[in-house]
Amino acid sequence: MEMLVSLIVQLVTGAVGGVGTARAGKNVDLGNTGNTIAGAIGGVATTWLATYIPGLAGMVGNAGGTLDIGMLVGQAVTGLVGGGVLTAIVGAIKNSMAKA
Image: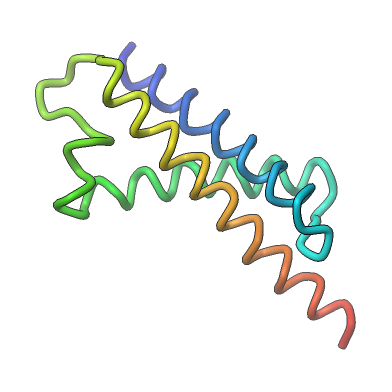
């Protein structure tokens, strides 16, 4: 159950980060569906990667397996940032290739 809640938090905040980034920077917009999908993937991927960084691992993962608010906030922030970053990267690549 704890893993499902964490995954939902990562997906939702990643999607929010992706949509927010695309609205802030029109040159990285992938469309509503593209922004949502890229953001959700970026949120999950970045949170997973953060578990391997010693300084961040304690904020986004919990060795005890219990669900606590600090872990969820860490995952939400990491998901939000990761979703925005992946959307910006994919959008910039897509839009630069469309101009060429």
